[in-house]
Amino acid sequence: QVQLVESGGGLVQAGGSLRLSCSASGHGFRINAMAWYRQAPGKQREMVATISTGGSTNYADSVKGRFTISRDNAKNTVYLQMNSLKPEDTAVYYCNARNVITGFDYWGQGTQVTVSS
Image 1 (spheres, helix red, strand yellow):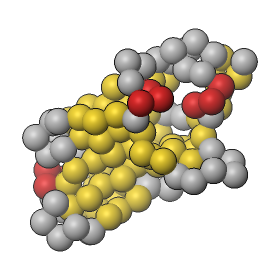
Image 2 (tube, rainbow, N blue to C red):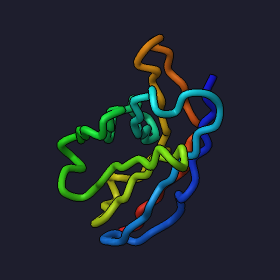
Image 3 (cartoon, rainbow, N blue to C red):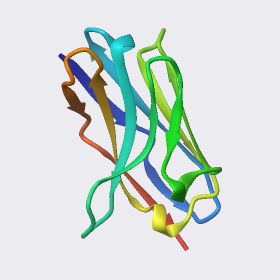
């Protein structure tokens, strides 16, 4: 069982930056692939960035070159550095952990990111 708690969301002007953190508690952080998803009002939840247990990363085209996902296994934490934010990045951002052995998915409660124009 993994519990995820996101932090770092807030209100920022277009062009600004935010860093989201996702702290994991429970068993086996190292065997979880981690990801950030987001959901804007009226839209489906979409993948933003993923990072494997070995550190390989993948990004949605809309955030490539602006967002960076990273993980610190010693701190059981995954980060999302968001630069050059745009109003269309406004959404609730969710942290996801997928146990690579069992396939179980875990989700955080979400953190609101609002980018004003």
